[in-house]
Image (cartoon, rainbow, N blue to C red; front, side, top):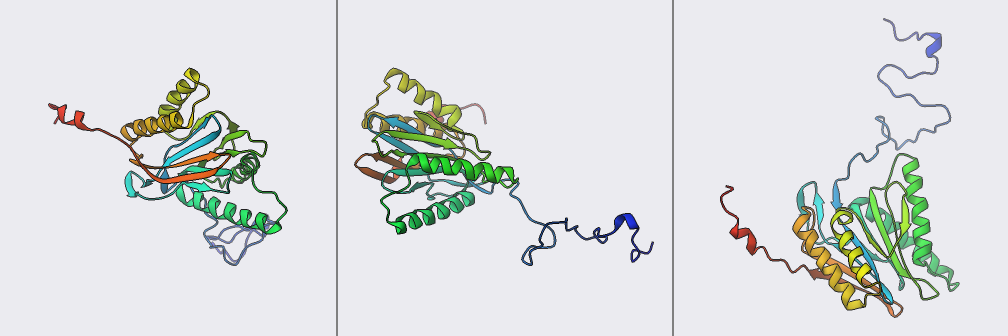
Length: 258
């Protein structure tokens, strides 16, 4: 068959073996001939992020492991970002997408400070903006593969804790957990708040520690080191490395299954 003469109904169509440029779409010179790529599956990922309100503040925690598939490849990554003195963001999911969000937010904070108008990002404002970003990327079939938690203090002194996932589902609550923590840690956190709605800071830290210990035992993608952010009216403190107090002695008592 002679491909040099195409049928009339194939006019302006792609030549055999080539891609079609749809009308109205500008072809970029930097775009490869095999088409634009989309992330089909995250490569390096982080697991659960926990957030809880306590009397006078917010506490957010995430472990420091970056998993390359099932390999515990990177054992010192940070997934907790201090946006400003009153706002903290943490994310699970694809670590490259988290870095992308981190850089954009960091630049937006710098731009906001350059205006010098006395305004800065509150947790509610950042949460609202992120819901639009995540839903916009999802609608373009190119989502950011993350579940994000945003927490901090509002200008009126109230606490704020919200989350948004990769398809734009967003809500706020007194306790939030993403990833595997939504199945294992969230029931523990809700039970603690039902028994005592106004936890103090020490009780909230103990609750986070117990949840991170359970996740380390049960979640194969978890790690025994985690970051802890504490946001209060006095400012934000991020403890970069908190150790999980685990005990595996019971493992030596299991025998007969070799």
